[in-house]
Length: 236
Length: 341
Image (tube, rainbow over all chains, first blue to last red; front, side):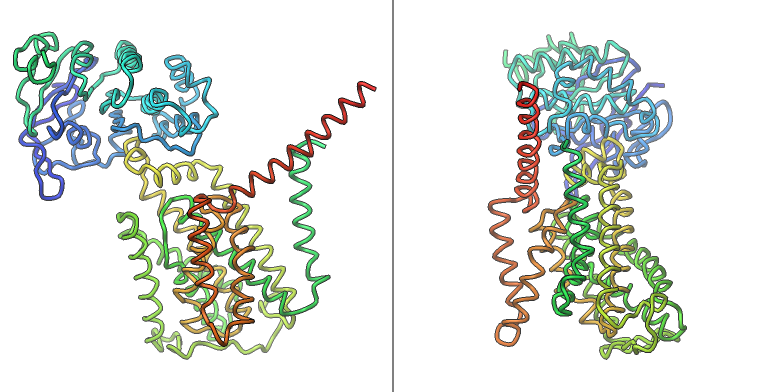
């Protein structure tokens, strides 16, 4: 039994089918990359796991029990936290309030002071900026808030959707280092990225999605050396 | 004097002036205008719980006013119950109707939600207009209900002069401002805010956005219905067009948008600015240009949205803070000068 298991799911946006008979599994403590071009269904997959979308067919198991028909708040309570693409901060609240909202679920609420301290240790910049409005932060800092807000929910699995989107190379590096640090502390990470080099470089395994189907899977190092991935995603 | 003391002083000053006004202002016309001003500030503050904090635009709140007005009036006319009891019953009824309306509509976004709430509000008005009796309860259709002014006094919620009404609505307004302030500082306030701005991100964090909005709507419809009872007891005659009018729903939204939705002061400032426009345009142009106030509201709304999209409360709050800075800063300098000398 895997930690998280996705078995043969079909997902639709309205009438349009985005994911076709997709299966994958994530083991406890792993970092798993999901790569693929625009429209491959990466974000849709994360939304389905976190309960924002419901699969039309198939099942999703977390620690052996099904979660695919449960509402997002129950899935969050179980420990699967999704950090959606594009940061999505509450721009007119302070950095600290943004983080505290992350600790909405009952499991995390009681521990929020301690978790907040951990987030500030991971991103010291956020401690300096804690009483600033989120809209006044730079892109990199906003991404730190988005990740910190996810951590506040005490994830067992943290799913990040394009954390490097729109960031300068140096900031991208910082963000990936932070994600690595989170994984090293024992959190399972599912990483959706277009920056294939960085994401595979820090992952244990990877899946390649094309047109809503898994076309390849394997250890990250193997994928990095695959000729198809080299030409299609790494541009080598 | 410290900044905090100055803030309290200005609050006390506003309180003394509003409680003292009827002692100076003897004209019933002006008292009437002030009562309506407070009533709209109250209605808009209640509306603000949903329309401001939760970031949606409900345009059917007059339905809750109507439910409050009709419930207390029917209970007092037919069963001799004090309107104060009817007020609470009306509030509870409005909560039930609010939840029934909220369940399907909160799944919609933006303009669709606004349109759906208009439809519910108007639907309730049309129903009341066409129903004479619900079982033993007499609604009297479009002819409305008249409350005969037989007994006056606090228990009957009926008074000869306007002053008691003035104080009742003033106290109600202070209560609703306190409630909205407490909610804005509570967890619920933050969840509403989060769900209003980025519903998907809030949901991904496990916030049950729809449930938070339903709680806000329940509180909002309860408070709004209380104003309906006040309105009925104040005018002593209600009919569907007076207590469930679309104009009223729109005016509440206008006041909120111009004053600044989502803030505590916005609804009060908006009412302070717009109600006199409404009343004086009715007094002076009511015969030749009825509805002129809505045109003025529209123009003001466009200007405010262009130049102060967060409402007039923002520049005014800034000016108030600068004034406090200046006062406390001046005092700090004085103290410094004294210690040097």
